[in-house]
Length: 464
Image (cartoon, rainbow, N blue to C red):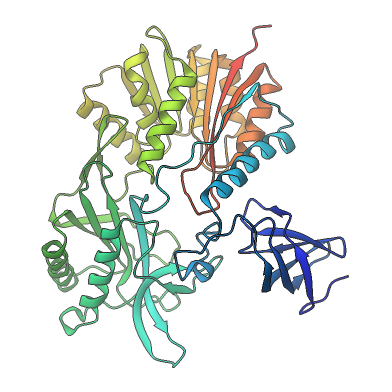
């Protein structure tokens, strides 16, 4: 058995899907963050469970060949970039293995073809959206200052951040400028929100940018709304625009609820437009604070193009896009099919999808707001027979109602895009147990340096 605070020398032999290294000590698996396969280190046991334990590196003896020097000084305490201490090539190998192992272990599936992972052309500055909480931060000398930052893993403990390498440089400039201005008497009404007491005003600074247009939206998420708050945030917005002319929209979202949900129901435009423009797969889009939009535009365009290639749509075919969001996937295929039908549970996303179709001059697309499973079941009962079904579900995957409706509609091809290989494998196994064949599996890296990995899957109906 292992005991807390014991120190052992061990070699890291594997990496988990959460990004922690794995070694075996006394035949017990020990999970060690910030390590790479091949590391030999002195490891201190910090927590012991019945069948496994957790450790930290006390001293690195022999570094892995995959190790590099992290470019962010806060990556260990922030916890967002679990792979920043190793080469991007090693990260892609790990993520590819995570996907293929999930399909083998959970789905018991062997695809006819496994394609190489879609790596990212850029591993820095690729995010088009960021949300920074604003809170009082106590330093080691007990001084307290309001700061922007991120929450440490599995907590609401603020890690002050003025620049993140995954965000555009302009986001860091805006963040620092806001922090400087809010520290002056001119903005005394904009106090940091306190989650425990519910006191204070500013909860989050929310920034998004059009990848192609470069237009920036700044949205202040507040717990309160009055004319004095609006005036001070308008003054702050004007100061930001003078420094960063790419800012075309300054918004205020009001969320008075005690909740972890960032955005509230009320949004007002303080300066400029109430949306910013961009394009995705050649389709013009208009982005509000609530709009669903792929966070890594460049990777989304590559993956949607691959989904289109795998689906091999034809001009006389009907494509059903379930969990369609703002319609990007279906609209990107609209020029190659007879008709696109999109389904999404969020009404605002459906309104965005309709507007995006109109803006792009696409007339063969129809969108429905509602639960994907319920509407798919309704379509199946009506005898609608799509030739292609595209599934882009949330992390929890598809429910049985949706999968059964897909089976009843009996399309010739199903293409799944997933942000969770485990639920994608589970859903693929269900479909393959009921008449489909897993033709192609391709991992995709949307979020370099983080633990997240996507995949795209092609399944075809087994006519026999």
